[in-house]
Structures are given as C-alpha cells and as structure tokens.
Image 1 (cartoon, helix red, strand yellow):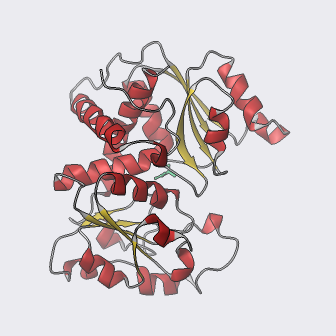
Image 2 (tube, rainbow, N blue to C red):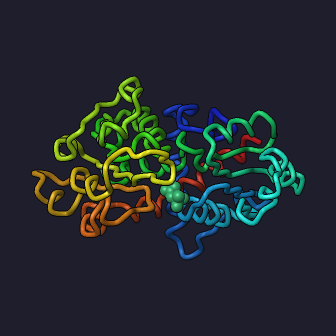
Length: 307
Ligand code: CP
C-alpha cells in the first residue's frame, strides 16, 4: 500500500506532489462511496477522532465530522467557547486532557499560526491542521485543487488566479503551494495593501486589475475580506472594494471564454461576489464543499495508517 510521507497534515508546504496525488486517488474512491445509497465504510472503526476548534467554522468542522462518521470513526467535538479554556487552561493541557480519554487523532483549528506545529512536537496523536490563523488551511487547498482536476481534467498547466485578501488568507498560501506542486501557473490579484510584501518570492504573478486577471485565467478562486483579522484599514470602504474588485455575472459573461469560479466560503454576497455570479453556471462553489468530505476522508484514512 502507498503511504503519505508525513504522519501529520500540518501544511501543504510539508507534503510532496506524490502525497497530493495519493490523497486525490484515495478521495476518488471515497467519492464513489459517497455516491452510493450506503455512504459508510468501516475503515476507521477502531479510531477515535477529536475535532478541536478554537475558531469559528461551518464548512470545515461539519465536513470533518461527516468524513469521520462516513469512515465509522468515533467522534468527539470540542469548541473553545463554553470550555475550560475560558478559565485559563493552556492549549497543551486542553489537548492532553482530550488525549487522556484515548483519542487517536486531533483535527484542530486555531487562530495562532503554528499552533498545530507546536502540538506535533508535544503529543503522539496524528494532527490535521484545519486552519491556523493566517498561515495554512491544507484540506481547503486539497479540495480546491481536487475540484479543479474534476472540472478541467488536470491541474497541471492551468492558470489559476486567487483574488482578494491574500495578506490575511491561509487559503491563499495553501492554494499557492498546492497549485504549484501540481504544475499550475498561479497569479494573485487584489489591492496592493492586501498583498504580502514577500508574495513575489513565492513565484506567483501579481496583477492589480481584476479584469486583466480574469482575462488571463482558467480558474478564479475568490476570497473574502477577513475583517476579523484586520487591525487597521487596508482600503477606504467595502463599497470601494466592491467597485474595484467585486465580480458579477455580467463581468464573467463579458469574457471571451468560460472560466471556473471558486470560493472557499463563507461568501460575503455583494462584496467580493454578486449573488448572480456566485450562483451562476461559472461557479463550482458547492462542488468544492461536496468534494471536501471525500478529501477529508482520504486524509484521515491515510494518516490513520501512519500511527
Ligand atoms: N472554508 C472554510 O474554512 O470555511 P469555514 O470557516 O466555515 O470552516
């Protein structure tokens, strides 16, 4: 049996193109399972997984929980709101107490970049990073590239632009690593204040004009403005952002080609995307969500064999 080169999924930076292909091939099989009348397999019947979320989530938390249940794992859910974290408990104490209940794997979202990497140096259980601050969101990038592969046949050779708040986005960084490992050309587009200073060092193209970016690309992955991570004003107003960087269906239809429109969610309708664009035939946004379950099943299944 083929194996991943890692025993934790902390970031796309740490895995190889072969790891990604193995995850995709495994996810193809799980997607077949998910399309059957009985959507469950016994693969992780003896494994207990804790979903430990220190930050808000809808898609990622539900998608992991469903993936775990489809694999027949036992699942417990921890959310920091209402927990003893509010009484001053440390991250390591919280996780060690969860592990004392005979938990095998930890899926963790945390607002601090590097939190899952810190944990991996102190605990034995497999860790999956479900988003660490502005750093990485590896399973989102995997499901994004998997969805491009499903829609366009391959990721290699495709031109993908990531549009919006690149500075605060873990989705952007993980997508850049995944797309480049799979042989895509990557561009970022947004107001110059929302592009990190180091961005060109990652080997991506930079475009400030959203229309030119859309004309260049095969795929546009549109990100939300992460107001919750912004301590200062990076642009005058949301209205002005929408004026210069908002994408609507009229703009998509006016391109002389069909492009694929993606968004990791949650969408701020009327800001980065109009409703008619988000719900148009260009969009594969709900396919991304559907594919998230198969990708997360694949990641958990492959990591469980590395215990
Ligand atoms: N895409 C994503 O991470 O969504 P949630 O914050 O709802 O999990």
